[in-house]
Amino acid sequence: MVEELTFKPEMIVNLLKEKGKILKLQKGEYVFHPGDTARYVYCLDEGEIFISRMQEDGREMITNYLSIRSSDTALCQ
Image (cartoon, rainbow, N blue to C red; front, side, top):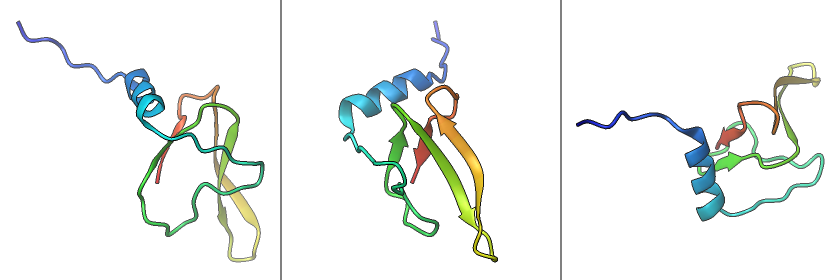
């Protein structure tokens, strides 16, 4: 009998928590900047993250908002 393979995000999050390293940031600190080399996966355990881009006129535009209440709580970098 072939067992059905199912994507289970909670298993990935548990693995990251078990094997990963905790990174605590203060309000206003950056996780990464545009153009940074992707080397890590981040899993939001508490708090919130704003993903933004700087506009040509110097204003910051928020493109995404992540919180522990949303389903999109992992960032890849």
